[in-house]
Length: 206
Image (cartoon, rainbow, N blue to C red; front, side):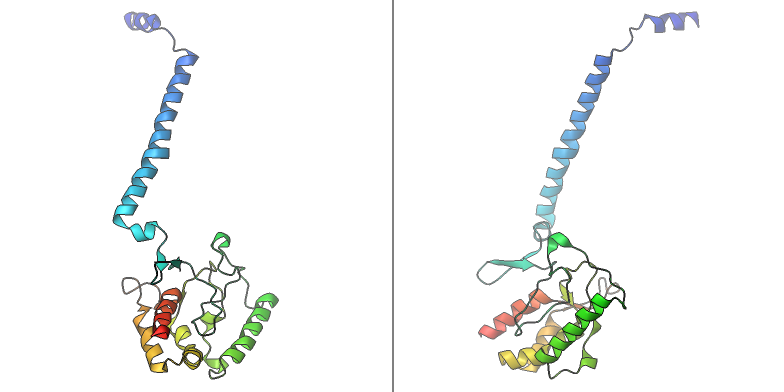
């Protein structure tokens, strides 16, 4: 025991400067690994394995011009196109979120009345009782790019009358763009509104 104590006492105490240098070195290593190497490696892997998703799932028209992302809805106002869900943020991606109104909230009730009144004007062929609830309600993010197939089909009479495209052809278009449940189990059938309108535009120019 005496020899051990003697050996320990022979070691010089570590200076504060040495401790500080160790901390600086360790910090530099983690900054390089976590701040440079990891982001670069993640970006490289994403570009190799899933380039479309890594770059925002952008969609381009026939001229190669970017017209939007398949992950973010758009505020389509042209009556000859399919319209998406109500968005209290006008589909502004930097302001994701909704008002989370309850069913008795006066602002939501007023908005719903205004939407229904406009619907009657734009879609006189479709009775109000056939209007899907998804068209008058906001999604949680306010950015939902999808509609239910029923919400797309109920707009067919208006679009057919304005474009001259037959209702049967538009029904077929909706079916072709209907996506099934994830893994056959999760979520609901849905239609991407931007993709549907891109296909509709191609039909209109033929």
